[in-house]
Length: 207
Picture 1: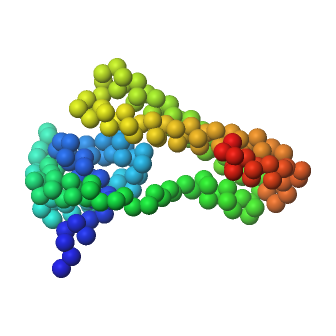
Picture 2 (picture 1 turned 90 degrees about the vertical axis):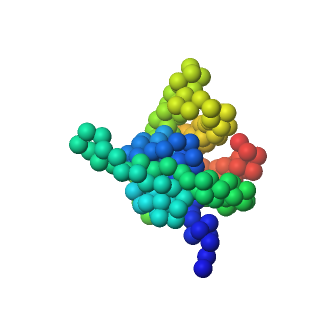
Picture 3 (picture 1 turned 90 degrees about the horizontal axis):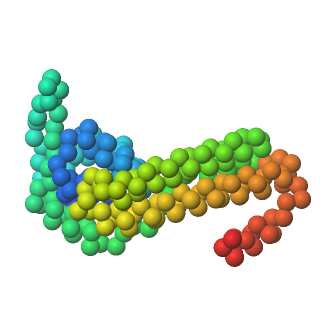
């Protein structure tokens, strides 16, 4: 029979990591995932109602029914066994990095549509990146002002927030660059006199 660890996913351990910080109801977990894991592991959001139950069934978390007014809920707490499994997983090499970016898929197949569609996609990518930068900068401001939700973990936020911020800035920079370039195109199948080689050389030069 496979071990408990072999049946767990990255999402399982992500939820265990949150439970290691404190106990949460499913509603509280949803809010915290939106603030933290959402930025680099959005899959966790789709598993929030199933994964804690699964962890409890495996003995890695404890579920306690509670009532707030008329509303009933379940609060989950990590167990000693759950902490051991989490610590063991942290010692394993991370899986290769992957990225899901529907906007880029649309750019890649833009020759099946028209130029207006392509540019609308690029504008949406730029707008989303700008909005995400604003949120990240607001979160960073809260941390600097002493309003961190978990001050004992501020050193880890100081490591992860700059990465996400740089990623969003790179996305915004690329979207603006792509809009400028495609402004010269006749269509998505005819880039006109656009210098393709120059764009590729810029990639090699890191420009």
